[in-house]
Picture 1 (cartoon, one colour):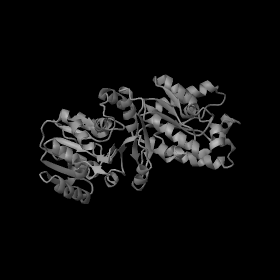
Picture 2 (cartoon, rainbow, N blue to C red):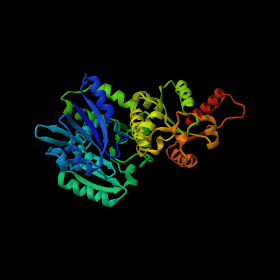
Picture 3 (cartoon, rainbow, N blue to C red):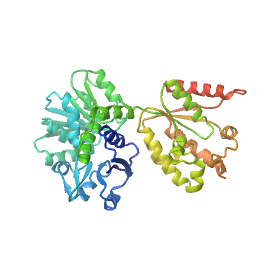
Length: 433
């Protein structure tokens, strides 16, 4: 039996982790869960080409509206929301459902204090789910705080049609902290709000962001005495509902929660050109921090049963880059670790997207120093490229783009290899704080 998450971009999705953990918790060895990057235009053809082993799909943007058009059946909740996040195979075809809304209700209900008014920060797609979840929780009036008044107006018009008993008003996003609502739901993306000005007192703040937790908003709300609920609880709750619809079995929620908490902890990732010392320093860092170490080149070679050079020679670089991206995404959405990436990994867009939210250390080394360190290593296919200097220059820009800190990997004259490794490791630890 097979299931997967679909959308674009998809590299950040933690759905594979959650569903696979669920399979393991219930001994569902015959089940597998994958990820596929798809646009809305590709969805009909993708579904048409599937065999009967496929039982369900989790959906992210931009497929939440598109799934309603391809489904043979749409649940009343998904139809009301105008969006689905789940496709389930039935005897008559595909059924579209929405587990985001009941998932948000499930995440909030344990701490809900019977509030009848609430604030929603943001007016995008997630805000629609928030409105219907608040209605289910007994809220009768909602203030939508948004940067763009026209987007808030569109949301209010939509709510008037699907939830006519709710009273919605709008205000500028900058005034939310003094609005007076005790229940505040932020549907904004990471970095869109910092929590400055949260008024001390009782109440609830929900932040839909789950990466880089606690967020600035969560920290500010907790310091102000508010109960805080993070996006991980929504992510977990909606996945539990999907899992049961796909398999007919309830997973171990506590196990999935623990696995999710480990997965969203930022990984320490080393990037840089060949010869920068990523593997050597990575191993030392992992030992120092008490974390596992993963060299993605070594991982790929072990899984493929071939050297990187042979993969390049037999199947070509594009094939290797696909293997590499898949391996890196799985590692970055797994347990805490120190991770070393191959020098060209950051050239793949999906890898750069997957690095968001992690602590990425760029080990900077000059072109001449890099070549001196690797010499004529026959295991490095990139050394045979005639445009190697240009490749080096292009990659430096990408390393800087993804890096959260940059550390020089240059040593002192006469240093031994161990002394150099110790020195660079100390620099990295200092930069990471």
